[in-house]
Image 1 (cartoon, rainbow, N blue to C red):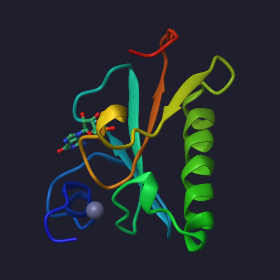
Image 2 (image 1 turned 60 degrees about the vertical axis):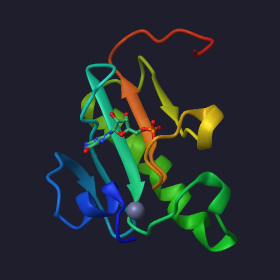
Image 3 (image 1 turned 180 degrees about the vertical axis):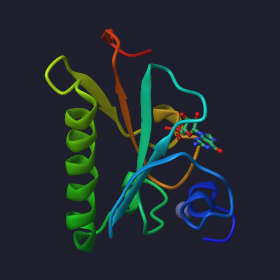
Image 4 (image 1 turned 90 degrees about the vertical axis):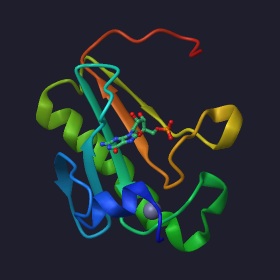
Length: 114
Ligand code: 5GP
Ligand code: ZN
């Protein structure tokens, strides 16, 4: 998609600190981290919001979560725990319209979220 920030990071047009990549997904550090680890995991295919998911995205969505648990394990915080979040549209406070899973770890979270 022409003007999408995360498509530009995927394509190397905007720098990103890539921490994981496979055929389906890419993961990079959030530019404004909210925890010692704050990684965004995106599908390589542009999908604007969760509302745009189709049946043919099932594998890609699975790959996003598998990447999250692998990164948590590699970094040693799988057992202590972490948070994964997809924000959707206005009430969800989505600000970048290329879906991304926030993988947030290495600090104590609180609940409920704000
Ligand atoms: P959202 O609010 O859409 O769920 O999350 C968007 C996330 O993208 C935010 O956590 C924000 O810090 C991050 N972000 C915004 N612009 C950039 C950027 O240019 N590079 C990176 N790596 N992250 C960004
Ligand atoms: Zn995109």
